[in-house]
Image (cartoon, rainbow over all chains, first blue to last red; front, side, top):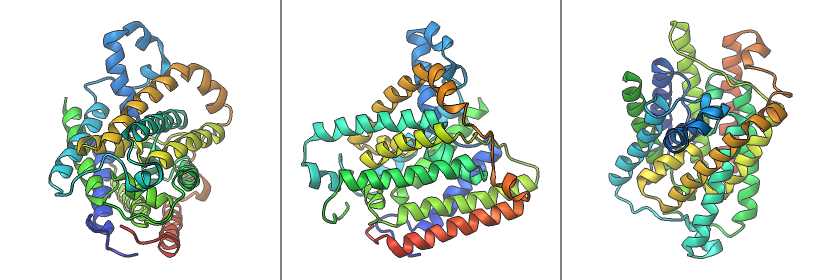
Length: 174
Length: 177
């Protein structure tokens, strides 16, 4: 395993740091999750707009609303991303180079695709019961078969999908 | 209220580290899926190895709250297929998408909005889909400990499995960072 991941942090110390955070979360709260944060956000929105609807649906009943650990966690993720991005010293791109090389610089095309992709990611995660974090990372940490099974499926399908969508010569990254 | 502060702190730390290692960069994720970038998948597997060891120690000392999600052959698998298509398409997953929005990536904002709509669509269909797809093929809260009957052996198996995967990725994936 090589430790060169420049301009990013090398993976070994990063993995130890993130595992430390994971264990801290297990100690102070429980299994970390992020796709549930989407449901929590929606629940907060729906409780304002249509409280009867939110209260009648099982998927919102089983999740905490705003003012919960989950809500704070996903907002914290965005904050952490903001602080890290601002102090990173490299401009962010609005689309990956691999996408631009294949489909051109149209923002419309990329944004429509990530909107549809985002829909699929969350629909799939809610059906399975969790996402990369809530099901694969948290689950496998707890030695859960569901996490290992989900991890094997998402990696295989994502690799297949990327092969179809991005079939192209090799691309440098930013 | 303490929960909120702990959650916020945990989220900030989490979001910071995944940005720094490059997981919020969809270009890296796409290259990882194309077998051209080994670091992100190796990183994910390393995180599991270390946090599984950490959780093992935490539980041995009487701490920690766990909640194992059930394994449903159809729902976990089909959910994974739908998820995998979206992940391969965008290079984002739910967690990295929040951090990437904070980072200022425009395509992540649309992924987040699409995600909210996707979660709302599933929540609307929960009462139909869970009894139809999740419940009938659910094996309950299955863990490796149920298979090996010994937590230490189960942990050892996980480490060997993921350690082997890290080596295989190092063998077959490229080194583009």
